[in-house]
Length: 241
Image (tube, rainbow, N blue to C red; front, side):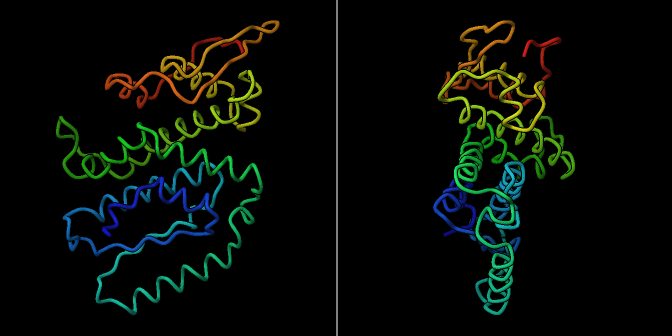
Protein backbone atom coordinates (compact mmCIF):
# COMPACT_ATOMS: atom_id res chain seq x y z
CA UNK A 1 0.00 0.00 0.00
CA UNK A 2 1.26 3.48 -0.85
CA UNK A 3 2.18 5.55 2.21
CA UNK A 4 -0.05 8.26 0.74
CA UNK A 5 -3.02 6.07 1.71
CA UNK A 6 -2.17 6.27 5.41
CA UNK A 7 -4.90 8.51 6.76
CA UNK A 8 -4.31 10.35 10.06
CA UNK A 9 -7.52 8.87 11.49
CA UNK A 10 -6.06 5.40 10.87
CA UNK A 11 -3.02 6.38 12.92
CA UNK A 12 -5.21 7.67 15.76
CA UNK A 13 -7.39 4.56 15.74
CA UNK A 14 -4.20 2.54 16.11
CA UNK A 15 -3.29 4.51 19.23
CA UNK A 16 -6.86 4.25 20.55
CA UNK A 17 -6.66 0.47 20.15
CA UNK A 18 -3.63 0.31 22.43
CA UNK A 19 -0.53 0.75 20.27
CA UNK A 20 2.39 2.53 21.95
CA UNK A 21 3.85 3.76 18.64
CA UNK A 22 3.22 3.84 14.89
CA UNK A 23 5.88 3.42 12.19
CA UNK A 24 5.16 4.50 8.60
CA UNK A 25 7.53 3.52 5.79
CA UNK A 26 7.48 5.26 2.42
CA UNK A 27 9.36 5.38 -0.87
CA UNK A 28 12.29 7.73 -1.38
CA UNK A 29 11.44 11.21 -2.62
CA UNK A 30 11.12 11.20 -6.37
CA UNK A 31 10.54 7.44 -6.50
CA UNK A 32 6.86 7.17 -5.56
CA UNK A 33 4.98 4.85 -7.93
CA UNK A 34 2.05 7.25 -7.67
CA UNK A 35 4.13 10.41 -8.24
CA UNK A 36 3.60 12.22 -4.94
CA UNK A 37 2.04 9.77 -2.49
CA UNK A 38 5.00 10.00 -0.12
CA UNK A 39 4.81 13.81 -0.15
CA UNK A 40 1.18 13.65 0.97
CA UNK A 41 2.14 11.09 3.62
CA UNK A 42 4.86 13.41 4.95
CA UNK A 43 2.33 16.25 5.09
CA UNK A 44 -0.17 14.12 7.01
CA UNK A 45 2.44 12.88 9.45
CA UNK A 46 3.68 16.45 9.99
CA UNK A 47 0.21 17.72 10.91
CA UNK A 48 -0.50 14.61 13.01
CA UNK A 49 2.67 15.41 14.97
CA UNK A 50 1.27 18.88 15.70
CA UNK A 51 -2.05 17.44 16.86
CA UNK A 52 -0.40 14.83 19.09
CA UNK A 53 1.80 17.48 20.64
CA UNK A 54 -1.17 19.78 21.28
CA UNK A 55 -3.18 17.10 23.11
CA UNK A 56 -0.15 16.14 25.21
CA UNK A 57 1.04 12.96 23.49
CA UNK A 58 4.73 12.69 22.57
CA UNK A 59 4.86 13.10 18.74
CA UNK A 60 7.94 10.85 18.66
CA UNK A 61 5.53 7.94 19.02
CA UNK A 62 4.72 8.45 15.33
CA UNK A 63 7.67 8.02 12.96
CA UNK A 64 7.93 8.10 9.17
CA UNK A 65 11.04 6.96 7.33
CA UNK A 66 11.78 6.87 3.60
CA UNK A 67 13.64 4.01 1.87
CA UNK A 68 13.58 1.94 -1.30
CA UNK A 69 12.38 -1.65 -1.46
CA UNK A 70 16.00 -2.72 -2.01
CA UNK A 71 17.28 -1.17 1.22
CA UNK A 72 16.63 -4.03 3.61
CA UNK A 73 19.45 -3.03 5.94
CA UNK A 74 18.05 0.49 6.22
CA UNK A 75 14.60 -0.90 7.04
CA UNK A 76 16.08 -3.03 9.82
CA UNK A 77 18.01 -0.02 11.16
CA UNK A 78 14.96 2.24 11.18
CA UNK A 79 12.61 -0.29 12.77
CA UNK A 80 15.20 -1.23 15.42
CA UNK A 81 15.71 2.44 16.31
CA UNK A 82 11.94 2.91 16.50
CA UNK A 83 11.48 -0.15 18.70
CA UNK A 84 14.21 1.05 21.08
CA UNK A 85 12.61 4.52 21.24
CA UNK A 86 9.18 3.14 22.11
CA UNK A 87 10.69 0.91 24.80
CA UNK A 88 12.35 4.00 26.27
CA UNK A 89 9.11 6.00 26.20
CA UNK A 90 7.15 3.15 27.73
CA UNK A 91 3.42 2.44 27.43
CA UNK A 92 1.31 5.13 25.80
CA UNK A 93 0.53 7.85 28.32
CA UNK A 94 3.15 6.88 30.90
CA UNK A 95 5.84 9.40 29.95
CA UNK A 96 3.14 11.96 29.09
CA UNK A 97 1.47 11.80 32.49
CA UNK A 98 -1.85 10.75 30.95
CA UNK A 99 -3.82 7.67 31.91
CA UNK A 100 -7.27 6.13 31.95
CA UNK A 101 -10.20 8.29 30.85
CA UNK A 102 -8.05 11.40 30.37
CA UNK A 103 -5.74 9.61 27.93
CA UNK A 104 -8.72 8.19 26.03
CA UNK A 105 -10.32 11.65 25.85
CA UNK A 106 -7.13 13.28 24.54
CA UNK A 107 -6.69 10.58 21.88
CA UNK A 108 -10.32 10.94 20.84
CA UNK A 109 -9.87 14.73 20.58
CA UNK A 110 -6.92 14.14 18.25
CA UNK A 111 -8.82 11.59 16.17
CA UNK A 112 -11.83 13.86 15.75
CA UNK A 113 -9.65 16.86 14.92
CA UNK A 114 -7.72 14.97 12.24
CA UNK A 115 -10.96 13.58 10.82
CA UNK A 116 -12.60 17.01 10.62
CA UNK A 117 -13.43 18.64 7.29
CA UNK A 118 -11.23 21.63 8.09
CA UNK A 119 -8.01 19.72 8.81
CA UNK A 120 -8.60 17.23 6.00
CA UNK A 121 -8.92 20.15 3.59
CA UNK A 122 -5.81 22.00 4.72
CA UNK A 123 -3.72 18.80 4.91
CA UNK A 124 -4.74 18.01 1.34
CA UNK A 125 -3.56 21.47 0.28
CA UNK A 126 -0.19 21.35 2.05
CA UNK A 127 1.77 19.85 -0.86
CA UNK A 128 0.03 22.15 -3.36
CA UNK A 129 0.65 25.30 -1.29
CA UNK A 130 4.37 24.53 -0.89
CA UNK A 131 4.85 23.52 -4.54
CA UNK A 132 2.41 25.23 -6.91
CA UNK A 133 1.06 27.84 -4.51
CA UNK A 134 -2.50 29.10 -4.14
CA UNK A 135 -4.84 30.32 -6.88
CA UNK A 136 -2.82 33.56 -7.04
CA UNK A 137 0.45 31.70 -7.56
CA UNK A 138 1.76 32.54 -4.08
CA UNK A 139 4.06 29.77 -2.84
CA UNK A 140 4.31 29.44 0.95
CA UNK A 141 7.47 28.66 2.88
CA UNK A 142 7.55 25.84 5.44
CA UNK A 143 7.67 28.49 8.18
CA UNK A 144 4.53 30.20 6.88
CA UNK A 145 2.70 26.89 6.49
CA UNK A 146 3.83 25.84 9.96
CA UNK A 147 2.37 28.96 11.58
CA UNK A 148 -0.93 28.50 9.75
CA UNK A 149 -1.18 24.83 10.73
CA UNK A 150 -0.31 25.58 14.36
CA UNK A 151 -3.28 27.96 14.61
CA UNK A 152 -5.69 25.63 12.81
CA UNK A 153 -4.65 22.63 14.91
CA UNK A 154 -5.11 24.66 18.11
CA UNK A 155 -8.59 25.81 17.07
CA UNK A 156 -9.76 22.41 15.86
CA UNK A 157 -8.45 20.50 18.89
CA UNK A 158 -9.98 23.10 21.22
CA UNK A 159 -13.35 22.74 19.50
CA UNK A 160 -13.30 18.94 19.65
CA UNK A 161 -12.36 18.95 23.34
CA UNK A 162 -15.16 21.41 24.06
CA UNK A 163 -17.59 19.01 22.37
CA UNK A 164 -16.35 16.02 24.36
CA UNK A 165 -16.23 17.78 27.72
CA UNK A 166 -19.55 19.57 27.28
CA UNK A 167 -21.64 16.88 25.64
CA UNK A 168 -23.43 15.74 28.82
CA UNK A 169 -24.14 18.98 30.70
CA UNK A 170 -24.31 22.73 30.32
CA UNK A 171 -20.94 24.45 30.71
CA UNK A 172 -19.61 27.98 31.13
CA UNK A 173 -16.64 29.53 29.37
CA UNK A 174 -14.64 29.65 32.62
CA UNK A 175 -15.30 25.98 33.38
CA UNK A 176 -14.20 24.94 29.91
CA UNK A 177 -11.10 27.15 30.03
CA UNK A 178 -10.07 25.50 33.31
CA UNK A 179 -10.63 21.99 31.95
CA UNK A 180 -8.76 22.74 28.73
CA UNK A 181 -5.99 24.69 30.50
CA UNK A 182 -6.38 27.61 28.11
CA UNK A 183 -7.67 31.18 28.18
CA UNK A 184 -11.40 32.07 28.43
CA UNK A 185 -10.90 34.29 25.35
CA UNK A 186 -9.86 31.33 23.21
CA UNK A 187 -12.74 29.20 24.47
CA UNK A 188 -15.25 31.99 23.82
CA UNK A 189 -13.91 32.55 20.30
CA UNK A 190 -14.29 28.85 19.64
CA UNK A 191 -17.84 28.76 21.01
CA UNK A 192 -18.80 31.72 18.81
CA UNK A 193 -17.45 29.87 15.75
CA UNK A 194 -19.31 26.74 16.84
CA UNK A 195 -22.54 28.72 17.22
CA UNK A 196 -22.20 29.87 13.61
CA UNK A 197 -21.93 26.21 12.61
CA UNK A 198 -24.94 25.20 14.69
CA UNK A 199 -22.78 23.31 17.21
CA UNK A 200 -23.28 25.53 20.27
CA UNK A 201 -25.89 27.79 21.83
CA UNK A 202 -26.49 29.66 25.07
CA UNK A 203 -29.08 27.52 26.85
CA UNK A 204 -29.55 29.72 29.92
CA UNK A 205 -27.91 32.38 32.05
CA UNK A 206 -27.07 31.70 35.69
CA UNK A 207 -26.58 35.05 37.40
CA UNK A 208 -24.44 36.84 34.82
CA UNK A 209 -22.82 33.68 33.46
CA UNK A 210 -24.08 32.16 30.20
CA UNK A 211 -24.35 28.37 30.22
CA UNK A 212 -23.56 26.76 26.88
CA UNK A 213 -24.98 23.64 25.30
CA UNK A 214 -22.69 22.02 22.72
CA UNK A 215 -23.25 19.22 20.24
CA UNK A 216 -21.03 17.15 17.97
CA UNK A 217 -22.91 17.88 14.75
CA UNK A 218 -24.03 21.13 13.20
CA UNK A 219 -24.93 22.51 9.82
CA UNK A 220 -22.98 21.14 6.82
CA UNK A 221 -19.97 23.37 6.14
CA UNK A 222 -20.36 25.51 3.05
CA UNK A 223 -17.23 26.47 1.11
CA UNK A 224 -17.43 30.02 2.47
CA UNK A 225 -17.96 28.90 6.07
CA UNK A 226 -15.03 26.48 5.78
CA UNK A 227 -12.75 29.27 4.54
CA UNK A 228 -14.01 31.59 7.29
CA UNK A 229 -13.33 28.98 9.94
CA UNK A 230 -9.75 28.59 8.72
CA UNK A 231 -9.12 32.33 9.01
CA UNK A 232 -7.84 33.63 12.32
CA UNK A 233 -10.54 35.63 14.07
CA UNK A 234 -10.88 37.49 17.32
CA UNK A 235 -13.27 37.13 20.21
CA UNK A 236 -15.89 39.84 20.83
CA UNK A 237 -14.86 42.63 23.14
CA UNK A 238 -15.72 42.43 26.85
CA UNK A 239 -17.04 38.85 26.74
CA UNK A 240 -19.27 37.60 29.55
CA UNK A 241 -17.84 34.31 30.78
